[in-house]
Image (cartoon, rainbow, N blue to C red; front, side, top):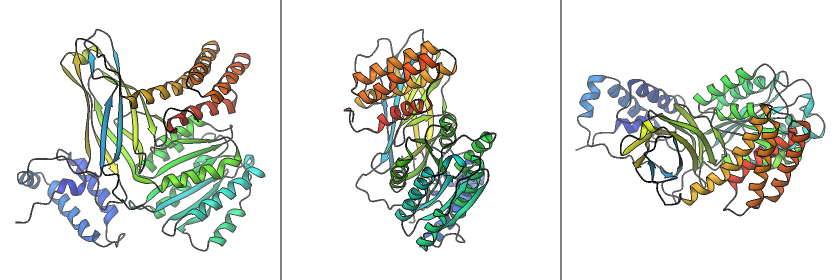
Length: 491
């Protein structure tokens, strides 16, 4: 007897999926597998299965009859597994709010499994405004040419140069006639103002031309300046790119760019910004980004969930692969899973007494959705429940080492964050004390060079009532980089 096909698994949804979730999953699968776009062996048959699944599950009567034929639901055999670590085994029944730290790790189920490496569809969006002229532009063009040379035959590449207008230097295509493409890059000249939206819009259009769910689709923006008046348009564009599963990574060159704003742009797509202190380092950072893209196992992990009454997320921070703060919402972009490092996110929950009346409390109930280009069918969603016991007496056990290490490094990052916020509020004495406190912690952990930089910035803040542009960014991105160090011994 032929077994009943699992239509829920075919569409990559859970059995209690709402009608709008079924429709959305079908549209996404149909776009990815339609025979007019895909000629890969076996995918036409999969497309027909997707159609059959949707026709059954979108009809309430047919769905009810189909559900009656299914065996008891089991946990799907996902290629990705998750682990949840808690800072303490239980919360205490008190008349005050309590903190609980939770570390969520995702990785490949079997490390030895050889997943194919997905091809890339990447667009470099280069700032060519007047501030990029001379040596800086020469270094940027050299880095772009090396990036082009590193691409593989199956990768799609495009390039946009922008100032107050954007030009497509290389339309989205495979790497044909490399010498001709390199000549186009060398012909770029600096001039004009900086309008980021112009560059991002052209870059998004080029990535759309080669967009394919079986590729890693990415925009890499390199800029050294501020944009004016188009910030909201850039954020809306990032939201649209995210819905189309197109990432935006940002590399800021020098000190005169808005890291807070560009962190938001990248963060809307599950990515982050990077600081390039010296133009000489552009090629190194761009090469590292290319290497990271070729190590992607899953391009995007999205957490959809709701908090229990009396529970809030104070803070969420991705510790790897690209460290940086995350915005918590009902739909939360966590970022990519890399082959060797996986994906880790640290949550700080604030739990009110009203949530601790029973012996067990649920903090967050949600679903992890995983986009994986190497699979023709969707990865089954992963149910995630973050919950804890409630007891009368506090626990005496120490937190797991992974949580202690993450908290130790997060504390350093949040200290510099606090100093920046205090400076913006005009509380310069508080900000100076926060920096000195940060320097003391850095010295205690052996990060002497960074501690020296922080102390110099504290003196500057005390005398001039402002951060230096370079010092502010150096401290922010250096404390982020601590998450990427192996072990606890500083470099």
